[in-house]
Image (tube, rainbow, N blue to C red; front, side):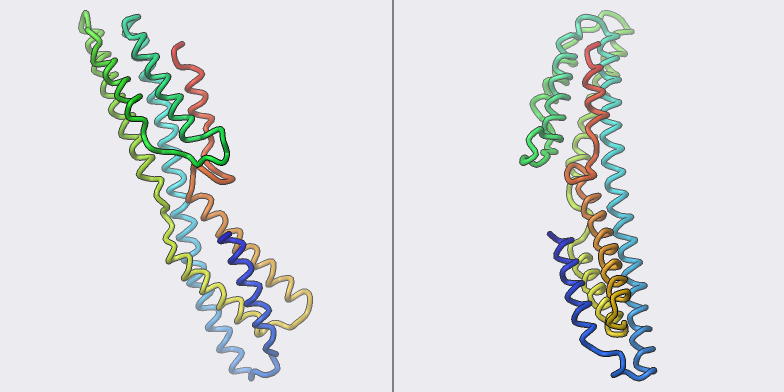
Length: 243
């Protein structure tokens, strides 16, 4: 709705600006309007670039954490497998916890939003099962220590995903940016001839700007929307757990 609303506001600005005939302005006035509009356009481009960069960085960090979470989980399963048959219960608990995380982060029901809250009970069950292992030699003792550390690392990564779920793009910055865009399109449309090519160019420009805003908002919610992070890395890991 934010993107559609912005496009509607920009169209209103274009129509309102074209109500002013460019013949009313002197050459000096036109140049002044152009300079002012170009200044605002430059500032808008900088802010737009910063917002895209910020949203993309947040998206990349979340995606990196998902891949790291998957890789560490699979490695933990391999460590437990190397420990011996005594770790069978811990491996079952690990698979259950991992599967529950997938169901929460990528719910099968589209109407239900992603839940990034860590699964405390399942995570604690995995850690408890590992701590209950009784090593018979130094080899198993080292594997138990490694498994316990990996479990802690997984808990930290999962908590980071929850902390990163907070939107990184400031709503105030978006409001300021949209206000500047309205000023830009109003100014340009005042000087533009009321002919089809000029109107088309302004409308296409408004669509492009709204496309950039859409990209920002989509990247800012990595576990939802049209370009959300894929669950494929975690589902591939799930298919290999316990083997």
